[in-house]
Length: 127
Image (tube, rainbow, N blue to C red; front, top):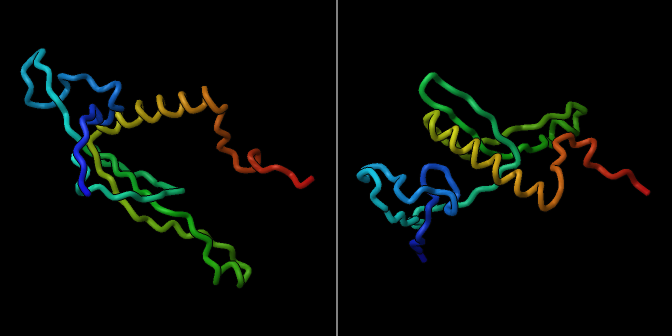
């Protein structure tokens, strides 16, 4: 079932931080109500990404890092990046996304502690 939610989540900002007059086409100072249309929304999981850029756009490829079992059995370990989604955006949107992700990560780390990016430091040794 499709749902429409009132949200401020346009232009890459969380709903609680989106300026009410931030939508395009609004006159200066005019309040604009933003509705989130999720009818075409689909969900994907990614454990890997890569990025690319042109002078005009930023491209983010999201997908999965998968172990190639055939290569592993042959003694040639190989990881395959299976790209499932490509998101293309302009630099202003990319900057909004970067700022928003920074805020989300900062809040998470304040609540749960620092996220360790070095996998070897995250592993617990066997007792």
